[in-house]
Amino acid sequence: MSEKAGKRESGTAVRSSASRTDVGPVAPTRLAASPLDTGRLRVDFPILDRRIRGKRLVYLDNAATTQKPRAVIDAVSHFYTHENANIHRGVHHLSDRATVAYDEVRQKTARFLNARSPREVVFTRGTTDSINLVAQSYGRAFLTAGDEILITGMEHHSNIVPWQLLCEQTGAVLRAVPLNSAGELELEQFAHLLNERTRLVAVVHLSNALGTINPVKHLIGLAHVRNIPVLIDGAQSAPHLPLDVQELDCDFLAFSGHKLFGPTGVGVLYGRESLLERMPPCQGGGGMIETVTLERSSWAPIPAKFEAGTPMIAQAIGLGAAIDYVSQVGLPAIAAWEKILLDYATHLCNRIDGVRIIGTAQDKAAVLSFVLDGVHPHDVGTILDYDGIAVRAGHHCAQPVMRHFGVPATVRASFAFYNTKEEVEVLADSLVRVRRIFG
Amino acid sequence: MGSLATLYQDLILDHNRAPQNYRSMENANRRVEGNNPLCGDKLTLWLRMEGDRIRDVSFQGSGCAISRASASLMTAAVKGKTRQEAEDLFQRFRRMVTGSLDPSEAQSLGKLVALAGVSGYPIRVKCASLSWHALKAALDQSDGVVSTE
Ligand SMILES: Cc1ncc(COP(=O)(O)O)c(C=O)c1O
Image 1 (cartoon, rainbow over the protein chains, first blue to last red):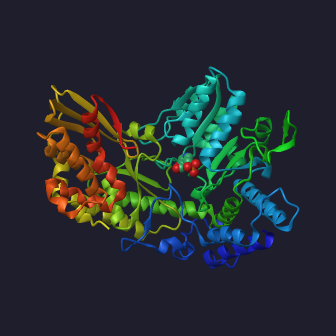
Image 2 (image 1 turned 120 degrees about the horizontal axis):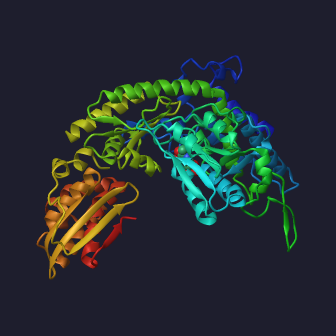
Image 3 (image 1 turned 120 degrees about the vertical axis):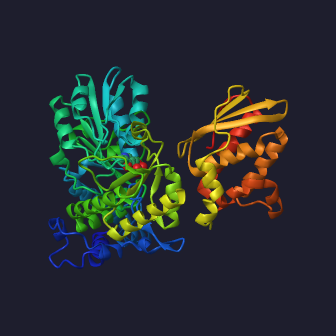
């Protein structure tokens, strides 16, 4: 691809999403306070026109995965239609272009995160894959028996289980910062649990089960006083909050393309260059080597060292289009609009008899988790589905959170910038109907 | 496509609110735990077998309305039946919730037909079947844990 194609794809996004701006595509980021023109933006998402059981789809399961704008769908389709080739392998024209396009996405991702260099951006299959990479590479190389890894009580299973596996392999010990009744971290406990044995901290930025935004910059500062590296699970923050790895000063940050309006199968691990340099590869194969003899091999420089085999080229190109799209809409504007939606949804739900909101942190975004007195979340989910509303009912891959709140599951409505206040009202009306059915 | 009214019938809502045979059993000779790991539903089933016959059956647990009502209706349906009769009923029940029941068989299911609406919601079939899987395990062996996965 393709500079030309790249421009064209992002051109599509500009035309359809942000034709309201005549001051250039980056302007919306500066207009943080103004609500988004969701009516305009929704046109970019073909699936939002779908009907479910005769009702217009109200998609409120964005924390599970987000819908894709036309620009992303077209970028992937364009790549397969016109540009498909393997990268780093051919002298021929198409291979050359695919290589350039793939590397351009890396640069774009580095800019999106404000990384110092594209060398700090490793492409992975997603957040889960990124965290496992750190556990198996950094963790196995530098942790030994008795060392401690500190996580929190609100982690997604993908930021718990990789560390448990590492602990089994190395004899390291996993500790977790407890939560208070609002679903916030007990900050004194965090400071208390950091000690001379702590070798790594891994914390979710925005909880997918509660919506809590953790004060990660503060936590990173505390850990760095003791020279402990910090991994941020940015799966939920990437689509909702502006991210700046230099400002946060995090050592690793993981996110998934599919939660950022991009394709499944691609994600990112940001890693501080000095750490990535020291880490051994954890998968071997093509693309990650410098020279191979039958006896031994030497590794390619970062980030290729961590990308064995043919990568997810088309998906990465789709991710590039998604990053362009999101950047044009502007994360400050997205965050501001989603705050309005969340406050409105909270207000309406609090008026419904028997609704108990799970997760009432001061600092919260995009996620409304709740239970309805006397009605199991799955029954709520089925009845909402009947009204065309897609929510998640379950433990949200965060069973320790459910245990903390003493519930087996919750109903979770999670928002994206294309959601509207009318959709929030449809949700509230449907919950009233659930109440009526169950008496 | 199932309609809401067929899924959440009054009979189901009543059994959800006030399930029958919802108690533990002191003199049970079989006890099985059922789990639906996907949604966290849990159920304990007690049986008192006398020879080949289910003398008493009871359950407790947490789950959605479909799984509670189904467990309640199941206990009422199999109490007093022989093992073979209960297993035959399970086969027909399974055909009903997966939408492959011969209409002529519907009558023999009695009140269990209230759960026929589940066939319009494939992901809820597991909810309706959990207690039956636990029953089958209890009939097959002695004690243990079963899972819908
Ligand atoms: C907070 C958080 N972390 C990690 C993940 C895992 O992401 P993925 O399944 O894309 O690897 C999720 C996805 O649900 C999440 O919400």
